[in-house]
Length: 250
Image (cartoon, rainbow, N blue to C red; front, side, top):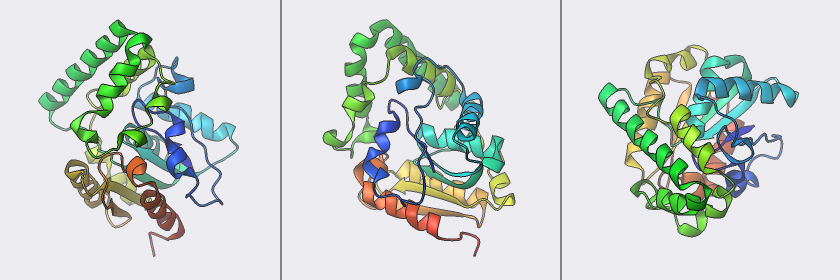
């Protein structure tokens, strides 16, 4: 099982649910480009899918269940489309297939680039303040401060996060909604997870499941918002475990 973290996190963020996952699955938990130990690596999402394919090969594994949260979910989706042979099942937490409207996507790209510029100006000295402001966004309003993992996020660098925003941010990613039916055609089991309190991503999950078809299902995590794996780790791990134990095609 490959676990892919969100923006400003590192692989350490999965420690909240790691112990709840089925013991039969060896875990591969990389730091994504621009983050943690991979802060010096610059890559867009398609390039990242190639790096992850190489990571899987280096681990001596030919197929895996891929689990991704937010940015990590968008990354896992790219892996599933670029390397379907490497994906046995796909779990996407709080994930969108991209911003379809060109004007909206351009506006988001400008915001991402502005954030990247700000990160580079402030440098690592301003990283703690940036991270505190990041998790204080309305998107994370239901995330208790003690579960936000700010200390773990400090393993990042300003330059690395700036690179990630410019290359892998939601504003620069091309929308993949039209390609979602490919997953259904390949009969790939897909689980879309969203927090009950995150209306936007619950809607994304429902729409993505409909586009994929009968091999897709949705799990809503009670009492959780966007960072559902941090807010309700046991519920999220249980949903993943049940999905792994269930033949979605039966």
